View 1 (tube, helix red, strand yellow):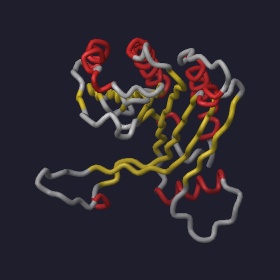
View 2 (view 1 turned 180 degrees about the vertical axis):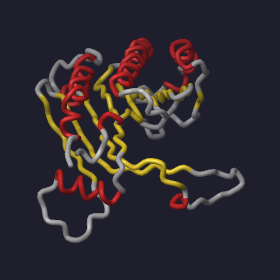
View 3 (view 1 turned 120 degrees about the vertical axis):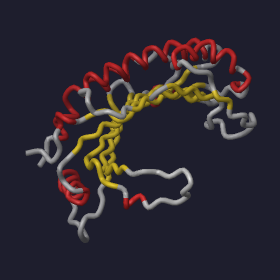
Length: 248
């Protein structure tokens, strides 16, 4: 029997990232950004007012609505989708992710029309709850993926591997043991002992990152959208993810 219940797996977070050549004047384009993105988020943007010569990766404009967030920096556009509930199956959740990505992708291409779009990436974090303890899961991951003798009792395990696929696309997979806790927070209290909060879920998280960064160094590279990375992510979710999580 598998150490996790794959049928109870769910997407806890989805990220879509598109990089672009540096645009030092993005903070002056707030009105244009709101004309394009505000309706999607149902809210206006927040201006961070950072100097133009500050870190190019730092947020300049932020849109926030429900469990959706879009961060626009000088060099990228990043959509983040959060899922609080595990009621929907992974395939159903992924269809929601696709719908949102396709919608925002169209808007990003419209907003970044005067800049050169570069690589893009889809990053999913999939959580698989387990009845095992955090320590037991760490040992199971160690036994599953590592071919070395442990020096002592295994306290934690994190596994990461990257593949270069045909078509010059990176597929990065990372496995970790997670623990979710829940407790009451008093706004007047400054410090908290997180370890005192009740554990509500323990499991194995799988972070899947598909991106076409290797293509951008090839002569004559032209941005062609998300179809390639989306197809690879879809195929991995359909079979490979479940195959690799079936271990005792």
